[in-house]
Image 1 (cartoon, rainbow, N blue to C red):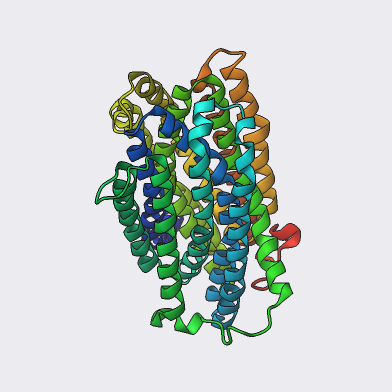
Image 2 (image 1 turned 90 degrees about the vertical axis):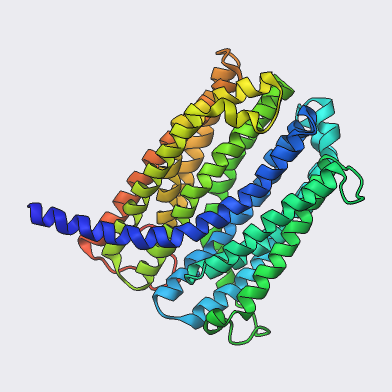
Length: 471
Protein backbone atom coordinates (compact mmCIF):
# COMPACT_ATOMS: atom_id res chain seq x y z
CA UNK A 1 0.00 0.00 0.00
CA UNK A 2 2.74 2.45 1.02
CA UNK A 3 4.80 1.47 -2.04
CA UNK A 4 1.81 2.06 -4.30
CA UNK A 5 1.27 5.49 -2.75
CA UNK A 6 4.93 6.45 -3.20
CA UNK A 7 4.93 5.34 -6.81
CA UNK A 8 1.81 7.39 -7.52
CA UNK A 9 3.26 10.40 -5.72
CA UNK A 10 6.44 10.20 -7.81
CA UNK A 11 4.36 10.04 -11.00
CA UNK A 12 2.33 13.12 -10.01
CA UNK A 13 5.46 15.03 -8.98
CA UNK A 14 7.13 14.08 -12.26
CA UNK A 15 4.27 15.74 -14.16
CA UNK A 16 4.32 18.91 -12.03
CA UNK A 17 7.89 19.83 -12.92
CA UNK A 18 7.41 20.14 -16.72
CA UNK A 19 4.10 21.93 -16.09
CA UNK A 20 5.90 24.54 -13.98
CA UNK A 21 8.74 24.81 -16.52
CA UNK A 22 6.24 25.55 -19.31
CA UNK A 23 4.10 27.78 -17.07
CA UNK A 24 6.90 30.14 -15.97
CA UNK A 25 7.44 31.90 -19.32
CA UNK A 26 3.69 31.90 -20.00
CA UNK A 27 3.10 33.48 -16.59
CA UNK A 28 5.77 36.08 -17.30
CA UNK A 29 4.11 36.94 -20.61
CA UNK A 30 0.65 37.18 -19.07
CA UNK A 31 1.90 39.27 -16.18
CA UNK A 32 3.58 41.44 -18.81
CA UNK A 33 0.22 41.95 -20.53
CA UNK A 34 -1.33 42.88 -17.19
CA UNK A 35 1.51 45.27 -16.41
CA UNK A 36 0.33 47.42 -19.32
CA UNK A 37 -3.00 47.88 -17.51
CA UNK A 38 -1.20 48.23 -14.18
CA UNK A 39 1.06 50.94 -15.56
CA UNK A 40 -1.95 52.76 -17.00
CA UNK A 41 -3.78 52.52 -13.65
CA UNK A 42 -0.83 53.80 -11.60
CA UNK A 43 0.10 56.60 -13.98
CA UNK A 44 -3.48 57.73 -14.70
CA UNK A 45 -4.20 57.59 -10.96
CA UNK A 46 -1.60 60.34 -10.52
CA UNK A 47 -3.74 62.58 -12.75
CA UNK A 48 -6.83 62.28 -10.53
CA UNK A 49 -9.81 60.23 -9.35
CA UNK A 50 -12.07 61.05 -12.34
CA UNK A 51 -9.54 59.94 -15.01
CA UNK A 52 -8.89 56.77 -13.01
CA UNK A 53 -12.64 56.10 -12.74
CA UNK A 54 -12.97 56.71 -16.50
CA UNK A 55 -10.12 54.25 -17.19
CA UNK A 56 -11.87 51.69 -14.96
CA UNK A 57 -15.16 52.21 -16.80
CA UNK A 58 -13.55 51.76 -20.24
CA UNK A 59 -11.55 48.77 -19.01
CA UNK A 60 -14.75 47.13 -17.80
CA UNK A 61 -16.67 47.46 -21.07
CA UNK A 62 -13.76 47.08 -23.52
CA UNK A 63 -12.47 43.90 -21.93
CA UNK A 64 -15.71 42.09 -22.85
CA UNK A 65 -14.92 41.80 -26.58
CA UNK A 66 -11.24 41.30 -25.76
CA UNK A 67 -11.77 38.30 -23.51
CA UNK A 68 -14.40 36.92 -25.90
CA UNK A 69 -11.71 36.99 -28.58
CA UNK A 70 -9.12 35.43 -26.27
CA UNK A 71 -11.53 32.60 -25.55
CA UNK A 72 -12.29 32.08 -29.23
CA UNK A 73 -8.57 31.91 -30.05
CA UNK A 74 -7.89 29.32 -27.32
CA UNK A 75 -8.74 26.69 -29.93
CA UNK A 76 -5.44 27.52 -31.68
CA UNK A 77 -3.49 26.28 -28.65
CA UNK A 78 -5.72 23.22 -28.16
CA UNK A 79 -5.53 21.99 -31.76
CA UNK A 80 -1.85 22.88 -32.16
CA UNK A 81 -0.90 21.04 -28.96
CA UNK A 82 -2.89 17.98 -30.02
CA UNK A 83 -1.20 18.02 -33.45
CA UNK A 84 2.20 18.36 -31.73
CA UNK A 85 1.47 15.39 -29.48
CA UNK A 86 0.39 13.33 -32.50
CA UNK A 87 3.59 14.33 -34.38
CA UNK A 88 1.70 16.04 -37.21
CA UNK A 89 3.51 19.32 -38.04
CA UNK A 90 1.50 19.76 -41.23
CA UNK A 91 -1.70 19.80 -39.17
CA UNK A 92 -0.18 22.41 -36.81
CA UNK A 93 0.71 24.63 -39.78
CA UNK A 94 -2.84 24.53 -41.10
CA UNK A 95 -4.22 25.35 -37.65
CA UNK A 96 -1.95 28.42 -37.58
CA UNK A 97 -2.86 29.56 -41.11
CA UNK A 98 -6.58 29.41 -40.43
CA UNK A 99 -6.20 30.63 -36.84
CA UNK A 100 -4.42 33.77 -38.00
CA UNK A 101 -7.40 34.66 -40.19
CA UNK A 102 -9.76 34.04 -37.26
CA UNK A 103 -7.54 36.31 -35.11
CA UNK A 104 -7.73 39.19 -37.60
CA UNK A 105 -11.50 38.81 -38.07
CA UNK A 106 -12.13 38.70 -34.32
CA UNK A 107 -9.87 41.71 -33.76
CA UNK A 108 -11.81 43.76 -36.31
CA UNK A 109 -15.14 42.80 -34.75
CA UNK A 110 -13.89 43.66 -31.27
CA UNK A 111 -12.67 47.09 -32.41
CA UNK A 112 -15.90 47.84 -34.28
CA UNK A 113 -17.97 46.90 -31.22
CA UNK A 114 -16.21 49.61 -29.19
CA UNK A 115 -16.72 52.20 -31.91
CA UNK A 116 -20.42 51.28 -32.00
CA UNK A 117 -20.70 51.60 -28.20
CA UNK A 118 -19.15 55.08 -28.06
CA UNK A 119 -22.37 57.09 -28.65
CA UNK A 120 -24.21 55.18 -25.91
CA UNK A 121 -21.76 55.55 -22.99
CA UNK A 122 -24.04 58.03 -21.23
CA UNK A 123 -26.79 55.39 -20.97
CA UNK A 124 -24.88 53.10 -18.61
CA UNK A 125 -25.65 55.12 -15.46
CA UNK A 126 -22.15 56.45 -14.80
CA UNK A 127 -21.35 59.91 -13.38
CA UNK A 128 -21.38 62.55 -16.19
CA UNK A 129 -17.79 63.62 -15.52
CA UNK A 130 -16.62 60.00 -15.87
CA UNK A 131 -18.46 59.55 -19.19
CA UNK A 132 -16.99 62.79 -20.52
CA UNK A 133 -13.45 61.70 -19.66
CA UNK A 134 -13.89 58.18 -21.09
CA UNK A 135 -14.90 58.94 -24.69
CA UNK A 136 -11.56 59.26 -26.52
CA UNK A 137 -9.91 56.61 -24.36
CA UNK A 138 -12.62 54.10 -25.35
CA UNK A 139 -11.98 54.67 -29.08
CA UNK A 140 -8.22 54.29 -28.68
CA UNK A 141 -8.50 51.22 -26.48
CA UNK A 142 -10.91 49.73 -29.03
CA UNK A 143 -8.41 50.30 -31.84
CA UNK A 144 -5.76 48.42 -29.85
CA UNK A 145 -7.89 45.26 -29.70
CA UNK A 146 -7.00 44.21 -33.28
CA UNK A 147 -3.22 44.01 -32.75
CA UNK A 148 -3.77 42.56 -29.26
CA UNK A 149 -5.74 39.58 -30.62
CA UNK A 150 -3.43 38.98 -33.61
CA UNK A 151 -0.45 38.91 -31.26
CA UNK A 152 -2.28 36.58 -28.90
CA UNK A 153 -3.08 34.11 -31.68
CA UNK A 154 0.60 33.94 -32.66
CA UNK A 155 1.62 33.56 -29.01
CA UNK A 156 -0.82 30.65 -28.53
CA UNK A 157 0.70 28.85 -31.52
CA UNK A 158 4.29 29.25 -30.30
CA UNK A 159 3.47 28.21 -26.73
CA UNK A 160 1.63 25.08 -27.87
CA UNK A 161 4.82 24.04 -29.70
CA UNK A 162 6.82 24.43 -26.46
CA UNK A 163 8.54 27.67 -27.49
CA UNK A 164 7.11 30.27 -25.07
CA UNK A 165 10.16 32.34 -24.15
CA UNK A 166 10.62 34.59 -27.19
CA UNK A 167 6.96 35.74 -27.24
CA UNK A 168 7.32 36.38 -23.52
CA UNK A 169 10.36 38.62 -23.98
CA UNK A 170 8.57 40.47 -26.78
CA UNK A 171 5.60 41.13 -24.47
CA UNK A 172 7.87 42.34 -21.68
CA UNK A 173 9.58 44.67 -24.14
CA UNK A 174 6.13 45.95 -25.09
CA UNK A 175 5.42 46.69 -21.43
CA UNK A 176 8.54 48.83 -21.18
CA UNK A 177 7.57 50.62 -24.39
CA UNK A 178 4.07 51.26 -23.01
CA UNK A 179 5.45 52.70 -19.75
CA UNK A 180 7.81 54.98 -21.66
CA UNK A 181 5.03 56.19 -23.95
CA UNK A 182 2.75 56.72 -20.93
CA UNK A 183 5.42 58.91 -19.33
CA UNK A 184 5.80 60.92 -22.52
CA UNK A 185 2.14 61.25 -23.53
CA UNK A 186 0.26 61.37 -20.19
CA UNK A 187 2.51 63.93 -18.50
CA UNK A 188 3.90 65.76 -21.56
CA UNK A 189 7.64 65.00 -21.61
CA UNK A 190 10.15 65.33 -24.48
CA UNK A 191 8.16 68.17 -26.01
CA UNK A 192 4.89 66.18 -26.29
CA UNK A 193 1.64 67.76 -25.01
CA UNK A 194 0.31 66.51 -21.65
CA UNK A 195 -2.65 64.43 -22.89
CA UNK A 196 -3.67 62.72 -19.62
CA UNK A 197 -5.97 59.72 -20.12
CA UNK A 198 -5.96 60.15 -23.91
CA UNK A 199 -2.17 59.83 -23.87
CA UNK A 200 -2.51 56.48 -22.09
CA UNK A 201 -4.82 55.34 -24.89
CA UNK A 202 -2.30 56.28 -27.60
CA UNK A 203 0.48 54.54 -25.67
CA UNK A 204 -1.57 51.32 -25.52
CA UNK A 205 -2.31 51.40 -29.26
CA UNK A 206 1.32 51.95 -30.27
CA UNK A 207 2.72 49.34 -27.86
CA UNK A 208 0.23 46.67 -28.98
CA UNK A 209 0.86 47.29 -32.69
CA UNK A 210 4.62 46.95 -32.20
CA UNK A 211 4.21 43.76 -30.12
CA UNK A 212 1.87 42.14 -32.65
CA UNK A 213 4.20 42.83 -35.58
CA UNK A 214 7.28 41.51 -33.78
CA UNK A 215 5.56 38.32 -32.52
CA UNK A 216 4.11 37.61 -35.96
CA UNK A 217 7.54 38.08 -37.53
CA UNK A 218 9.08 35.68 -35.02
CA UNK A 219 6.48 32.95 -35.47
CA UNK A 220 6.67 33.08 -39.28
CA UNK A 221 10.46 33.28 -39.59
CA UNK A 222 11.95 31.49 -36.54
CA UNK A 223 14.06 28.44 -37.56
CA UNK A 224 12.78 26.39 -34.58
CA UNK A 225 9.19 26.78 -35.85
CA UNK A 226 9.95 26.26 -39.55
CA UNK A 227 8.79 22.63 -39.54
CA UNK A 228 5.35 23.76 -38.34
CA UNK A 229 4.71 26.43 -40.98
CA UNK A 230 1.93 25.89 -43.53
CA UNK A 231 3.11 24.02 -46.63
CA UNK A 232 1.56 26.73 -48.82
CA UNK A 233 0.32 30.06 -47.41
CA UNK A 234 -1.85 30.95 -50.46
CA UNK A 235 -3.52 27.50 -50.63
CA UNK A 236 -7.31 27.19 -50.60
CA UNK A 237 -8.89 27.62 -47.18
CA UNK A 238 -10.84 24.83 -45.52
CA UNK A 239 -14.27 25.70 -44.13
CA UNK A 240 -14.13 22.45 -42.15
CA UNK A 241 -11.00 23.67 -40.38
CA UNK A 242 -12.64 27.02 -39.60
CA UNK A 243 -15.62 25.08 -38.21
CA UNK A 244 -13.24 23.02 -36.07
CA UNK A 245 -11.56 26.12 -34.63
CA UNK A 246 -14.86 27.86 -33.96
CA UNK A 247 -16.64 24.81 -32.50
CA UNK A 248 -13.88 24.48 -29.90
CA UNK A 249 -13.43 28.21 -29.40
CA UNK A 250 -16.93 29.66 -29.13
CA UNK A 251 -17.98 27.86 -25.90
CA UNK A 252 -14.73 29.08 -24.30
CA UNK A 253 -15.45 32.58 -25.63
CA UNK A 254 -18.96 32.43 -24.12
CA UNK A 255 -17.54 31.26 -20.81
CA UNK A 256 -14.95 34.08 -20.82
CA UNK A 257 -17.61 36.60 -21.79
CA UNK A 258 -20.00 35.69 -18.99
CA UNK A 259 -17.23 35.53 -16.40
CA UNK A 260 -15.73 38.90 -17.30
CA UNK A 261 -19.14 40.47 -17.92
CA UNK A 262 -19.99 39.63 -14.30
CA UNK A 263 -16.94 41.62 -13.17
CA UNK A 264 -17.78 44.36 -15.69
CA UNK A 265 -21.31 44.60 -14.35
CA UNK A 266 -19.80 44.78 -10.87
CA UNK A 267 -17.84 47.84 -12.06
CA UNK A 268 -21.04 49.38 -13.44
CA UNK A 269 -22.76 48.77 -10.08
CA UNK A 270 -19.82 50.53 -8.43
CA UNK A 271 -20.73 53.56 -10.55
CA UNK A 272 -24.18 53.51 -8.98
CA UNK A 273 -22.45 54.00 -5.62
CA UNK A 274 -19.81 56.71 -6.35
CA UNK A 275 -16.72 57.63 -8.38
CA UNK A 276 -14.62 56.64 -5.34
CA UNK A 277 -16.14 53.16 -5.45
CA UNK A 278 -15.29 52.78 -9.16
CA UNK A 279 -11.70 53.90 -8.53
CA UNK A 280 -11.30 51.49 -5.58
CA UNK A 281 -12.77 48.66 -7.64
CA UNK A 282 -10.33 49.38 -10.49
CA UNK A 283 -7.31 49.27 -8.20
CA UNK A 284 -8.46 46.10 -6.42
CA UNK A 285 -9.43 44.28 -9.63
CA UNK A 286 -6.09 45.24 -11.20
CA UNK A 287 -4.24 43.67 -8.25
CA UNK A 288 -6.44 40.55 -8.27
CA UNK A 289 -6.06 40.22 -12.03
CA UNK A 290 -2.28 40.46 -11.72
CA UNK A 291 -2.13 37.50 -9.31
CA UNK A 292 -4.70 35.67 -11.45
CA UNK A 293 -2.28 35.82 -14.40
CA UNK A 294 0.04 33.46 -12.54
CA UNK A 295 -2.75 30.90 -12.08
CA UNK A 296 -3.78 31.43 -15.69
CA UNK A 297 -0.20 30.74 -16.76
CA UNK A 298 -0.32 27.42 -14.94
CA UNK A 299 -3.73 26.74 -16.51
CA UNK A 300 -2.44 27.46 -20.01
CA UNK A 301 0.52 25.15 -19.47
CA UNK A 302 -1.85 22.45 -18.19
CA UNK A 303 -4.12 22.93 -21.22
CA UNK A 304 -1.16 22.50 -23.59
CA UNK A 305 0.26 19.47 -21.76
CA UNK A 306 -3.14 17.77 -21.51
CA UNK A 307 -3.47 18.39 -25.26
CA UNK A 308 -0.05 16.82 -25.85
CA UNK A 309 -1.03 13.75 -23.79
CA UNK A 310 -4.34 13.47 -25.61
CA UNK A 311 -2.67 13.76 -29.02
CA UNK A 312 -0.17 11.07 -28.02
CA UNK A 313 -3.00 8.83 -26.71
CA UNK A 314 -1.48 8.88 -23.18
CA UNK A 315 -4.83 9.19 -21.44
CA UNK A 316 -3.74 8.24 -17.93
CA UNK A 317 -1.32 11.19 -17.81
CA UNK A 318 -4.10 13.72 -18.38
CA UNK A 319 -5.42 13.27 -14.85
CA UNK A 320 -2.00 13.65 -13.23
CA UNK A 321 -1.16 16.73 -15.31
CA UNK A 322 -4.50 18.38 -14.51
CA UNK A 323 -4.67 17.84 -10.78
CA UNK A 324 -0.94 18.47 -10.38
CA UNK A 325 -1.56 21.88 -11.95
CA UNK A 326 -4.57 22.52 -9.71
CA UNK A 327 -2.45 21.87 -6.60
CA UNK A 328 0.36 24.08 -7.89
CA UNK A 329 -2.00 26.99 -8.62
CA UNK A 330 -3.88 26.64 -5.32
CA UNK A 331 -0.63 26.87 -3.32
CA UNK A 332 0.61 29.82 -5.33
CA UNK A 333 -2.65 31.75 -4.99
CA UNK A 334 -2.79 31.02 -1.26
CA UNK A 335 0.52 32.88 -0.86
CA UNK A 336 -0.80 35.81 -2.91
CA UNK A 337 -3.91 35.88 -0.73
CA UNK A 338 -1.81 36.36 2.40
CA UNK A 339 0.06 39.26 0.76
CA UNK A 340 -3.17 41.02 -0.26
CA UNK A 341 -4.66 40.53 3.19
CA UNK A 342 -1.64 41.82 5.12
CA UNK A 343 -0.52 44.63 2.79
CA UNK A 344 -3.78 45.92 1.33
CA UNK A 345 -3.45 49.54 2.47
CA UNK A 346 0.19 50.05 1.35
CA UNK A 347 -0.67 48.45 -2.01
CA UNK A 348 -3.63 50.81 -2.47
CA UNK A 349 -1.40 53.77 -1.59
CA UNK A 350 0.82 52.99 -4.58
CA UNK A 351 -2.05 53.84 -6.92
CA UNK A 352 -3.74 56.90 -5.47
CA UNK A 353 -3.51 59.36 -2.56
CA UNK A 354 -7.23 59.79 -1.80
CA UNK A 355 -7.75 58.46 1.78
CA UNK A 356 -11.34 57.40 0.98
CA UNK A 357 -10.28 55.36 -2.06
CA UNK A 358 -7.29 53.85 -0.22
CA UNK A 359 -9.48 52.72 2.69
CA UNK A 360 -12.15 51.17 0.45
CA UNK A 361 -9.53 49.47 -1.75
CA UNK A 362 -7.93 47.86 1.31
CA UNK A 363 -11.32 46.38 2.27
CA UNK A 364 -11.84 44.99 -1.24
CA UNK A 365 -8.36 43.46 -1.24
CA UNK A 366 -9.24 41.50 1.92
CA UNK A 367 -12.16 39.95 0.03
CA UNK A 368 -9.83 39.31 -2.93
CA UNK A 369 -7.47 37.48 -0.56
CA UNK A 370 -10.30 35.15 0.43
CA UNK A 371 -11.09 34.06 -3.13
CA UNK A 372 -7.51 33.69 -4.45
CA UNK A 373 -7.31 29.89 -4.06
CA UNK A 374 -10.78 29.37 -5.57
CA UNK A 375 -9.76 31.52 -8.53
CA UNK A 376 -6.66 29.40 -9.10
CA UNK A 377 -8.56 26.11 -8.87
CA UNK A 378 -11.30 27.16 -11.27
CA UNK A 379 -8.98 28.51 -13.98
CA UNK A 380 -6.69 25.47 -14.00
CA UNK A 381 -9.64 23.06 -13.94
CA UNK A 382 -11.34 24.73 -16.89
CA UNK A 383 -8.03 24.93 -18.76
CA UNK A 384 -7.40 21.22 -18.21
CA UNK A 385 -10.87 20.42 -19.54
CA UNK A 386 -10.14 22.61 -22.56
CA UNK A 387 -6.98 20.60 -23.29
CA UNK A 388 -9.02 17.46 -23.80
CA UNK A 389 -11.66 19.35 -25.81
CA UNK A 390 -14.38 19.52 -23.14
CA UNK A 391 -15.74 23.05 -23.55
CA UNK A 392 -19.56 23.17 -23.53
CA UNK A 393 -20.42 21.88 -20.05
CA UNK A 394 -17.67 23.98 -18.39
CA UNK A 395 -19.14 27.04 -20.11
CA UNK A 396 -22.55 26.26 -18.60
CA UNK A 397 -20.98 25.80 -15.14
CA UNK A 398 -19.28 29.20 -15.46
CA UNK A 399 -22.47 30.98 -16.56
CA UNK A 400 -24.40 29.53 -13.63
CA UNK A 401 -21.66 30.39 -11.12
CA UNK A 402 -21.28 34.01 -12.18
CA UNK A 403 -24.72 35.12 -13.35
CA UNK A 404 -27.06 32.93 -11.31
CA UNK A 405 -24.99 33.18 -8.12
CA UNK A 406 -22.29 35.89 -8.08
CA UNK A 407 -24.07 38.90 -9.61
CA UNK A 408 -27.48 38.51 -7.88
CA UNK A 409 -25.90 37.78 -4.49
CA UNK A 410 -23.48 40.70 -4.86
CA UNK A 411 -26.28 43.09 -5.85
CA UNK A 412 -28.45 41.92 -2.94
CA UNK A 413 -25.63 42.40 -0.44
CA UNK A 414 -24.63 45.79 -1.87
CA UNK A 415 -27.98 47.54 -2.09
CA UNK A 416 -30.79 45.99 -0.03
CA UNK A 417 -28.17 44.56 2.34
CA UNK A 418 -26.39 47.89 2.71
CA UNK A 419 -22.86 46.47 2.30
CA UNK A 420 -22.00 48.67 -0.70
CA UNK A 421 -18.86 47.90 -2.70
CA UNK A 422 -17.72 45.18 -0.29
CA UNK A 423 -21.05 43.37 -0.75
CA UNK A 424 -20.55 43.26 -4.52
CA UNK A 425 -17.15 41.65 -4.01
CA UNK A 426 -18.54 39.08 -1.57
CA UNK A 427 -20.90 37.98 -4.34
CA UNK A 428 -17.99 37.64 -6.79
CA UNK A 429 -16.05 35.58 -4.25
CA UNK A 430 -18.99 33.19 -3.84
CA UNK A 431 -19.30 32.79 -7.61
CA UNK A 432 -15.62 31.90 -7.96
CA UNK A 433 -15.97 29.30 -5.20
CA UNK A 434 -18.95 27.69 -6.94
CA UNK A 435 -17.07 27.64 -10.25
CA UNK A 436 -14.02 26.03 -8.63
CA UNK A 437 -16.06 23.19 -7.13
CA UNK A 438 -18.05 22.51 -10.30
CA UNK A 439 -15.12 22.58 -12.71
CA UNK A 440 -12.75 20.50 -10.56
CA UNK A 441 -15.47 17.86 -10.19
CA UNK A 442 -16.09 17.89 -13.95
CA UNK A 443 -12.40 17.25 -14.65
CA UNK A 444 -12.38 14.44 -12.09
CA UNK A 445 -15.34 12.75 -13.80
CA UNK A 446 -14.04 13.21 -17.36
CA UNK A 447 -10.51 12.00 -16.78
CA UNK A 448 -11.72 9.16 -14.57
CA UNK A 449 -13.57 7.73 -17.53
CA UNK A 450 -10.45 7.82 -19.69
CA UNK A 451 -7.91 6.67 -17.09
CA UNK A 452 -9.97 3.89 -15.48
CA UNK A 453 -11.79 2.44 -18.46
CA UNK A 454 -9.28 3.14 -21.29
CA UNK A 455 -12.11 3.80 -23.70
CA UNK A 456 -11.26 4.82 -27.23
CA UNK A 457 -11.20 8.59 -27.71
CA UNK A 458 -11.83 10.39 -30.99
CA UNK A 459 -8.85 11.07 -33.28
CA UNK A 460 -6.88 14.30 -32.94
CA UNK A 461 -8.84 17.32 -34.12
CA UNK A 462 -12.21 15.54 -34.01
CA UNK A 463 -14.85 17.02 -31.76
CA UNK A 464 -15.83 15.07 -28.70
CA UNK A 465 -19.49 14.21 -28.25
CA UNK A 466 -21.07 17.50 -27.13
CA UNK A 467 -17.82 19.11 -28.30
CA UNK A 468 -15.89 17.68 -25.43
CA UNK A 469 -17.47 14.94 -23.35
CA UNK A 470 -15.46 11.77 -23.07
CA UNK A 471 -17.45 8.76 -24.19
